Image 1: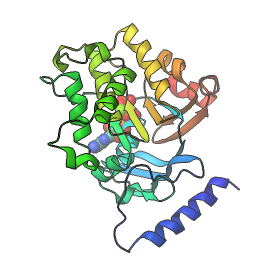
Image 2 (image 1 turned 180 degrees about the vertical axis):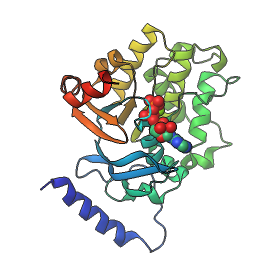
Image 3 (image 1 turned 90 degrees about the vertical axis):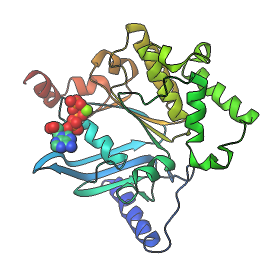
Image 4 (image 1 turned 60 degrees about the vertical axis):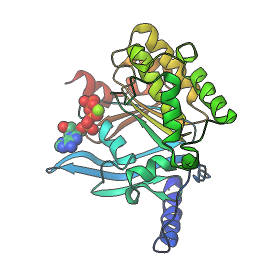
Length: 279
Ligand SMILES: Nc1ncnc2c1ncn2[C@@H]1O[C@H](COP(=O)(O)OP(=O)(O)OP(=O)(O)O)[C@@H](O)[C@H]1O
Ligand SMILES: [Mg+2]
């Protein structure tokens, strides 16, 4: 018997226990990862006009892992992220963040506040503000620090912004306007803005699109360095890039998992070879 189905049962029982009573207020830091995974997607189906973008998708992401998701165009990769972030509601199936938080019953805002950050392909930055100010605004957008909205930054908050600038390799660009950054630097700044909210899970969809070779290499180092403290889920088509960061790789095809394993295992998997070369 799959041990995960036992987790699933306990989790559902607990979810039932907490449902109904006063609404559970979720705050970051209380994600129950005692069984290992931080994200549980089970039998998720999403239909658009009868077409199943996700078809009984079951996928688990471990706490602190770096997972690469690959698959041909239309496989359902972005839709999977839409389900995790609450943008799209599944027709059926369950999606949990840790043991207790039912993502299908939380708003997009609640999911983001609970600690799931998503980086979009097109960065949503404030071009006329400096890099430092962009990170500051991201921090102030976090309602948990709402009382400090009009206050001056504390020393601790400044230190945190500098720490994140260091992580995303933008310390030297700290006082540049965001508009002056290169394409790759803008992407890193947006990752920095997400980090200001201290997410447990980071979802990044096609992070290296449009980047130079050097920016691509540095992005690989950045994403690798974030794993451990955060769980990082990366969707990317560039196989050389995926190989450079891959630990466990999941191949999606027609809305479900075709293969899972390390890079060599999935690349040598007959079904994967069929899908990529048979098309
Ligand atoms: N809002 C929508 N309405 C109708 N169809 C949709 C919608 N969103 C996605 N789809 C369809 O669902 C399927 C999966 O799309 P999705 O964007 O998840 O694929 P993907 O794996 O991210 O592909 P790509 O690699 O091209 O980004 C596609 O056939 C797509 O056309
Ligand atoms: Mg996509």
